[in-house]
Image (cartoon, rainbow, N blue to C red; front, side, top):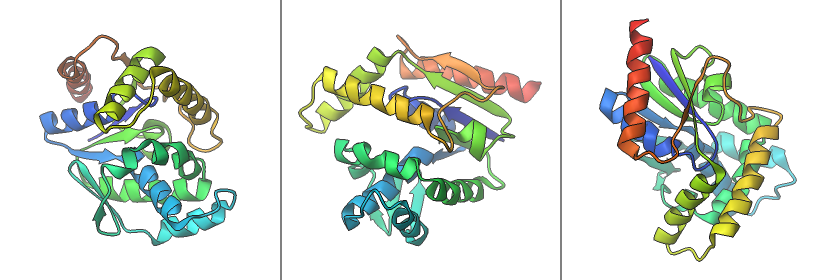
Length: 217
């Protein structure tokens, strides 16, 4: 069974998807981390972001490996580094690149073959797994999402304000929604869940109920 969880930045997709996968004893696929890893590799190489073919060529050469809660780039654990503000700021160059998306979607489908999986990202229910048995669109208000992101960044020692986080997030929402390939949009058959005011376990409870109902139908 494939469960997709899409939604905007800061909605809690990664934490919720990871927790839901554990509860159901499914595999977890953090596709957003894959795009971040490509962006990190491009940043390290000093690529010209105005040369998308260079980034696509680099992406095809990378060894990106997901294991449990960690992501490895050419054998190096980059799970923390890909979440930095510096990498977040350039991830759109990987996410907006049609050739990179095509390559990573192919990797995602291969990773999901023959498995029970929870796949989290922006286009999982619309592009990567359009035939998924259960599709969820997880959202939250912009203010709630910005507060969560601010707390994450402060925990890492990054000096940012709520206003800066909110401005960056709104720009990213616009970029994600207007992307020509794999834009952020709910699949027609996705069930929308708002996480405002809910603890992690409460959101997971909601999603687990949806999944079990889908399994019975």
